[in-house]
Amino acid sequence: MATKQDLAILNSVFNPLVPLGECPVESIVDDELKDDEVLTPSVVESKELESNAVKLAEAGRVEEAITILNESIQISPERPSGYNNRAQAYRLKGNISAATKDLDSAIRLSGGTGKSACLAYCQRAIVHRLQGEQKEAVEDFKKAAELGSDFARSQLVQMNPYAALCNQMLRKVMSQYQ
Image (tube, rainbow, N blue to C red; front, side, top):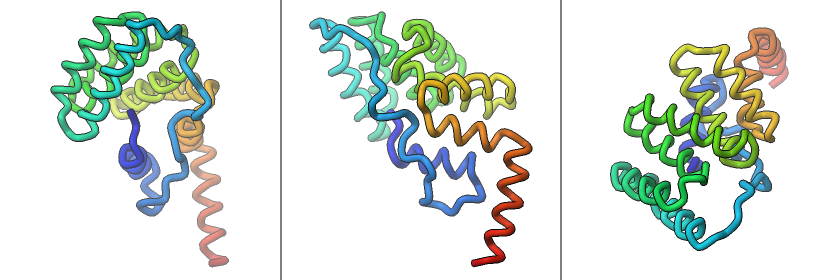
């Protein structure tokens, strides 16, 4: 459910020294990473509802999106993607406890693998980081990075004080040559 605008906002929050519009990460997860699910009629219907809900959320109609995501989850409660996307909607509404509960469900249902797990680990890491829970954020970013998230890798570098110091020194040296 992460749009380019979402990524730009995340980039400006977590990489304040990078000029606006220069997002070092095109996507949170590798496009080839997929969830392993059998396309039963209920899964197909659930995915369709979820897709509609994402469009509503992107249009700012978050409450409607949550209602449709609830329906999607009710139809196919074993799908982690619905919980992950509903967590994103809850975050947009400021309901962090509900978002965290859904992220935990997405990770549990996914078995910690696939696209939904990767996205859920990234989202949960962001929640931890914004709440000042650095150790937990690092743990979740590491898991997302292991699943192929370049965004998670970039956040781990930013959160590493030694890497941050090296990056700062490198930027200073490079700026002298420009």
